[in-house]
Amino acid sequence: MEVRAVTKYVKITPQKARQVARLLQGKKAAEALGTIALIPRKAARLLEKTLRSAIANAENNHDLDRSSLIVKEAVVGAGPTMRRFRAKARGMAGRILKRTSHLTIVLSNE
Image 1 (cartoon, one colour):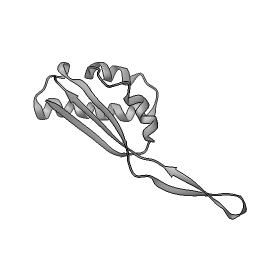
Image 2 (cartoon, rainbow, N blue to C red):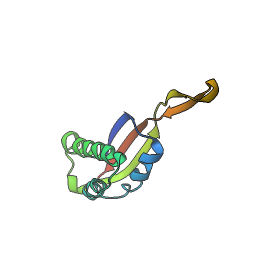
Image 3 (cartoon, rainbow, N blue to C red):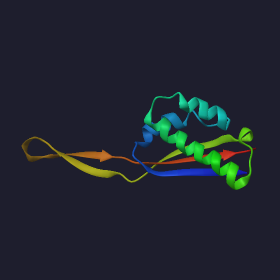
Image 4 (cartoon, rainbow, N blue to C red):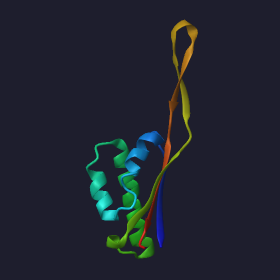
């Protein structure tokens, strides 16, 4: 059985979050939590929160055992981008892109 947790509109670029998400795929859920707790990045904190949510969903909604769960997918998709501008020389404007992400973690007991 597959269990999913999604965190949407997180204020971090997808590229930075994908670097951390790659480390989680294929690991046991408990091992992934231990690994992610040691990574000193904002993306690690956000993915840890999503992983804990997925584990709680599996335990409470589907009566699955925590020790049997494996991280099947850890996907980071692009969310909407806020566009801002900063004033530049000679009356021009430089564009600033404030990117957001959607974090998805899928756990499986198989």
